[in-house]
Image (cartoon, rainbow, N blue to C red; front, side):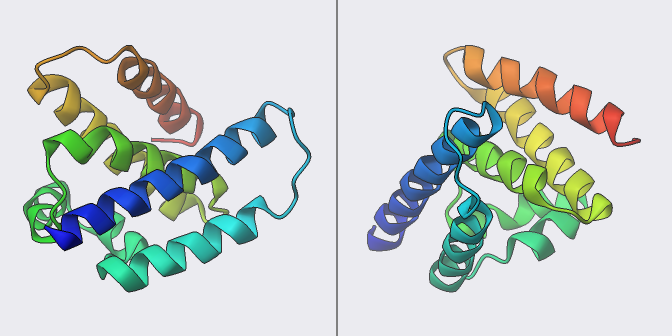
Length: 139
């Protein structure tokens, strides 16, 4: 229970960083330190949850989904986790890692939309954006 609450807290903190990143992308704020903030948050996230995101997205799709329950990532977390992966992928300079992040994010959004009892317009928009980004970066 405590680990699940802590994971939700980390997702919430990532959401705050994603808000800053969105503001930066939309040029609402000029904050060159955001990549450092994201990196610091990712390091803390990886330390506290034992999830190494770079290694996680490098797994095959089957291995990826098989290990999510191991980290207490459930269907209700898929949308938030997909957002984290998408935004992290946007910041990566390594093209292979960028594409891996986008692919895993896309899979999570698809699973979320398929398994959720409600429809998420946000997840659908993000999925379309991911399809565009994946096509743009060469898959």
